[in-house]
Image 1 (tube, rainbow, N blue to C red):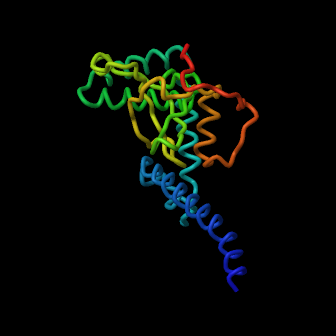
Image 2 (image 1 turned 90 degrees about the vertical axis):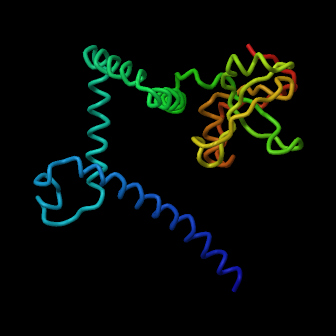
Image 3 (image 1 turned 180 degrees about the horizontal axis):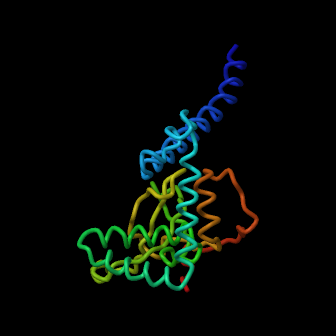
Length: 208
């Protein structure tokens, strides 16, 4: 009896979570239809509600935005708009931080994360993947030893995590790209990648 129950759970738990995530995504995307005039809503035009049409509109808006930004005029217009946004008190600071993280996670050429590290967290006998960021000048000037700033993402959502300052000698630099590390974090270590190299590193490995 217990064996059959566990087998059934192994089938329905991942399936149920997958369906829940899909439903949440589709429902959220359908909210973009509210941007259209009432007379243009598919529910009004077709007389029935078809879930998922918001995905098409979202995809079209994102694709059109990308096409516009890729040309010279779009780049200049966006650069001017972004410059103005950065000068808005409080909003500019939030936007700048979010943009740096999104550039690193999405574009592949962001410079927010300098290295992938191993740091001792959450206790001295455990190691966690972390990304080296930047130590604020004021903080660095108040530390006697050499410290590095690290961002330790949570699993399976790497956009959340912890920001710490740890001693440089207590970290291990990994020969691993940010993309590979993120895949390992999101998959909770289940997904392996051929790009990951297994090479030993000493705790006092030097940064470039």
